[in-house]
Length: 198
Length: 200
View: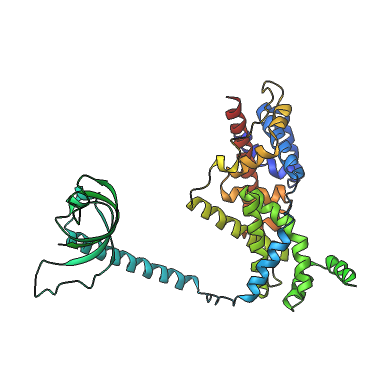
């Protein structure tokens, strides 16, 4: 068994004439003795020989034309600034810093997101994608818990949000109420711009 | 006159050609393209299994050469330097393809083809021979991981020496040898699997 393992490790070296004379003799002796190794050797030898003779693929006729055109474009466009070579230690340090910032920012956004919308775990189907902080924010002095923001909503059920404000540019997936009322009372939106009050 | 000059340039060594190109001789670049485009195309095609993508990789390789001609230093062999660029681009293309989730055997067109398989009860040589068709091998190569795929293409299809393969992949000679052997064994196993699947 160990001999078979050593044999299979040396097949390529034998084929590429990389074995010493003694190793070669040992290899050939085992090949004569072991049928499965002889079979394996024969298969790999045939495979390697075939690969050496495999027909080479060639470039298409338009290759040169396309290359010339791309080169012409290359000559017209100014070269991008090359990135300066940074030593591996600094690369690692920069990556660590970026990772830390990303994790911290992610946690902050996540906490703020959950706090702002008071999302419960079972409301994962509600997905809000804020596009910008609307300029419609009401100063805190006017209302402590009253905020308005502008959102793009994906697959959002209107009933999931208690205080829905103005809706615009919406595409509905399902509607149970008439869309005549603005905004509709119960609808699933594919996308919409909305001002939501919390 | 021009023809004569080209003929002379074709016989120049790669290192002379790139040196001339670095000094602004664009005819040297043309000679390099002519000399390497098919070699690199074959390499990229065997790596990606797609002619269009392979041509794109080769074009990009020459564009990179054009853009970064001064990055080449005489410490490396020019051909291995060029292969390294093409190999990296091919790997990037594979990663992109995986990201786009476009890679599948059916995309490569292998599933649609019918292959003739001889009776496996015949002797080994004949059975192996029957399987050894270009498409089968290409299919099996596509199923190898990148590190085995690149060594087998460079060594067995492109016919490069172990030293050149090591230089291109930036791995020691001993690693190249053991990796080539493992790649061949794996490829043989893949071919057996393909044959088995087709006969079932």
